[in-house]
Structures are given as structure tokens and as C-alpha cells.
Length: 327
Image (cartoon, rainbow, N blue to C red; front, side):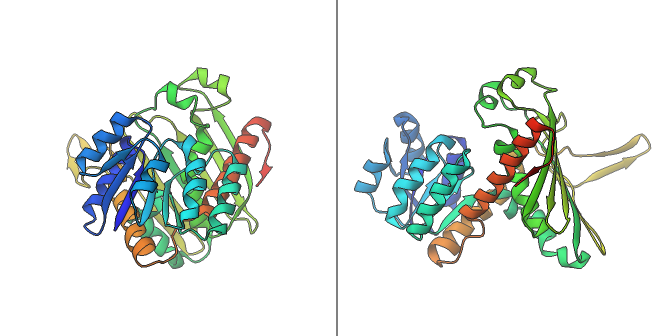
């Protein structure tokens, strides 16, 4: 299969390598307005590079598109590529603005485009195993998610990221929906600027707690920080009628040392590219094998992106109002 990729940054490079290493697909072209970056990435895979999507699709035929460009370009690319009716993989978010997400969803549905959205955490082997075993604890009552970043993103990025809830917590909103098994109807959010006080100017926070509630009363609690001194912190706990399931942090190894002077273990991974490397590979294989080759339904679609965005909107509103807000 021949794949065209849009974007030439760090994430695009990782996705490009996963396509190439799949052994069932190859890169046909790289598109990025930064011509030098596009050429550099294309040279690694001996494929063509272009500065615009028009040049690429006019000159090279492919079987699917992979969008890993800057978030602000996703909407235009989706709208322009959808008429080709080829499968599209798009990194999150579709857009920060929910109206734009809805417009993309309408176009995807109009052209019946197989569309996979990049919420990579659902492909993590530990989290996926936890999801499969939820039946063992009967009805889910509570979900607790800890998600703390490392290293702290630069301020220049944070002030244009769309805010913590749309940029970072959006992954946790998607995971909470998956584990609760019901749509969220109410949200309460609180937060502080303990790391970067200047974020207040942009209406954003770097430390937050969000509580989600479904119509039947199931509850999810998410705590976030933009920086954890000890590494990339990712944990999940699901509590149900008949017990609890839990996933702890993943370190470089799971070896623990017990000695007379104490107990020690490896720190969590440095950051998300290391922690979720296997999940990113599994995500791309799902796209290539299941969606493109076998024409199966994507695990995560545009509708999932819309629902996560609606929760993020409610969380942002709650942060400002200090009240529980409806989704």
C-alpha cells in the first residue's frame, strides 16, 4: 500500500517510520509547507516531497492519507482530501473549535470516508487489557485517571495550544468515555497556574482536576499536571461492583530492588514518545491492516473526537464559571 503523509515534524517522523516498518506499506510522498523539512523526511524513505496537498495528489496516487501536520491545518486538509474517498488517519485534534469538528464530521459522513482519529492511548497494551477485563468487576462505578506530563512544554507552545483541556486532557476524556461505557453529561473542573503564572493571561491552567458524570451516575476523576519531576506519569484505576482493576506506570523495566536501605525501582518513561511508542505502532498497524487493507471500521472515529471536544468545552466553561456544566 502507498501512503501519503502530511507533516514533517517529530510526530510525523515517528508515524512515517511506523508506516515504513510495517512491511505492508510504504511512503509515497511527504507534504509540508516547510520545503526543507519535507525534503529531509522524504529522503529518509526515498519518496517525493511537496509543499502543498494539491501538488501531491495531482502527481502521486496513494491508497490512504496520514495527517500529522500542525493542528491548525487539520480542518482544511480533511475537507480537501475527503472527496477522494480514501481512508484518512488524523492525529488529534480534528480542531479546537467544536463547530469546525462538526463540519468535518459532516464531510466525512457525506463522502463515507474511513476515518481514524489518533487517540493513541487506547492502543496501549496495558490499558487495552484493562478495558477487556472490565466485565470481571461487573458494573463500573468510578474511573480514576492520573496524567502528568514530562518535561513541561515550553510556554510558547502552551499559550497557543488551545488550553489544557483541549490539548492534554482530551486524551483522558476519550479514555474515560471508553472505560465508563456511557456518554458524559456533566462536568466540573477546577485548576491553578502553579508552574507558569503567566498562563492566567490566556485563561489556561497547568494543574487541574476534572470530574465527569454520566446519566446513570458513573463518575470519572481526572487529575492533570503539565510537569511531574519524576517522569511521564500515566495511571488508571477502574472501580466496580465486584472489585477494582488498575494499571500503574510503565518504567524502563519493572525490576524492583529490595535492600536494607530501602526499596527502589526505575522511574517512569521520560515522555510520551517513549511511553507510548508501542501504542503508536499498534495504532498505525490498525489503520493499515484493518482500515485500509481489510476495510474494517476504525476503532476511533470522528464522532469520538466530537464527544471528547464537547467534554473539553464543558470543562473549560466550568473552570470559568466554578459550576457543574452540562455537556
